[in-house]
Length: 85
Image (cartoon, rainbow, N blue to C red; front, side, top):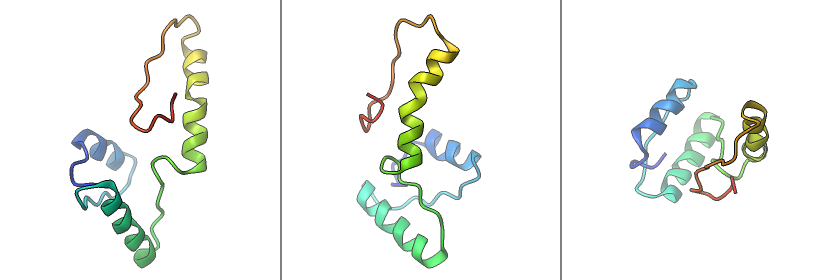
């Protein structure tokens, strides 16, 4: 993850059991480092927005919310990558 990644995101990722490496000032630098670590150590890299499982999960989140809150009139979602729109 880039060095400027919010601590709440870093900690949440760690809670899922991941080892987090903070590197670079921008995403592309962190991505390049991740590719190096993947090749060097055989780590699994989960792309934050270009991964079939991630896209599938983000594509069904509204259905899950509607199952839990069928009377909801409004659903607010983050749009950092616009994939939830």
